[in-house]
Image 1: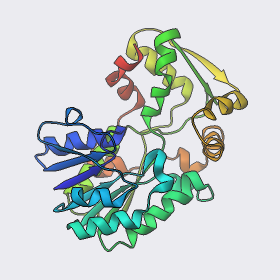
Image 2: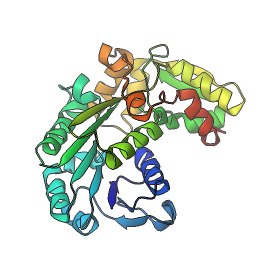
Image 3: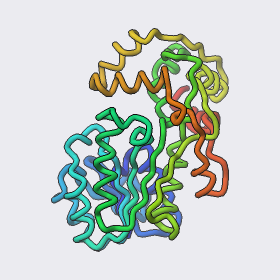
Image 4: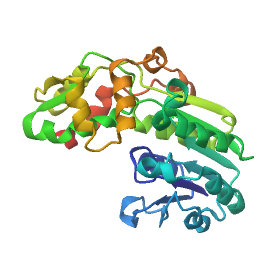
Length: 281
């Protein structure tokens, strides 16, 4: 049995689907999951990743664990307690969803420091482990869905600075391989898309996906900062703006790992936009 935490997120939802289609026994868990959110063959169980005791019944009898990064409640995650519960339940393999920020922003508590501590716990757990370090997601563009629907407009800072954002489906497919196949133990996979794309190019791709032009409006750094502070803590905002506006070479580098694991190139932002066009119409 494979347990997937964060099963209602952009990566977890796709991972559950891939595993179910492969015929695996899957338990999908998150704080508010329901049976209607998973395939018929998948067991959905509510549990809190920040409460290891709530996970113990979920992990009992499991062979492998997909460990989500904790999301907004990550600061309350004790990875060693979760991993201890996993080992007690019989888990032998863990795949961690980490962040490229562990490599590129180690000085940042929000992007590097926190996930480095989780990675260290995984490495020291005694389990077979694989670490996934994605960069920014294609699906971050969902933040533009409402203004695109209402005004056919995207507003973002640093309109001509590109990052090789990655499709959450590619992350999920790599995770599925690492959970089900040998050869990934002790490996760190950096996951990116096939090429850097700028916010302006992403707005154009969304326009092509919905069949109508989408206007790009470039925000100033201060305008973007004020908007982000409405839903992100200040340290997260500052690091995010640094990545968007002045990315390091490692943050713009295209990794070969998606293609190495899956045997095909990573999906482009354009493909993601076509697949999710309904969210922007």
